[in-house]
Image 1 (cartoon, rainbow, N blue to C red):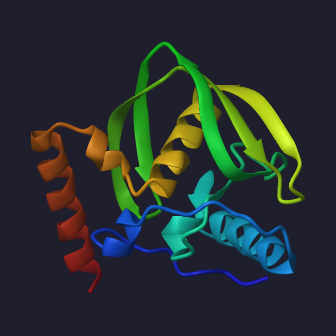
Image 2: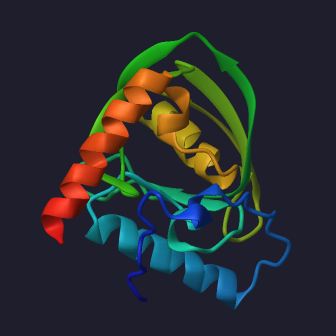
Length: 167
């Protein structure tokens, strides 16, 4: 396994729309393992392949406190959503910045496992927010795109200031 480099905003590669996975082979299995390793190492709860410059419709998630509920999503599709909620979201591609983002409060997702098995499952709470966030990444959308212009500008200025301070 290898920890991968997470792209950080404003990297244009975060805007690339991922393509569907068609081959379920050893390369895919290794990419999934690398995604999990990178997510855990960076203390995330989700990571889309797009964020590590792999433009396939893959993301991994584990919202547990002890890394006990890893889930891999291949070619995910939200087939049902209801309600609305807002909670603070962060992102490994936007280190150190958080914002309240409107999301559906309950979703049903159809996806494939890394073995190519069809799954359909409902999500609520943190998992629901995470799934929506990661699917957005696969579509070239970041969580700041859901904010008003004013909030987006403030958040991006904060990120730029943090990036300057780390140089």
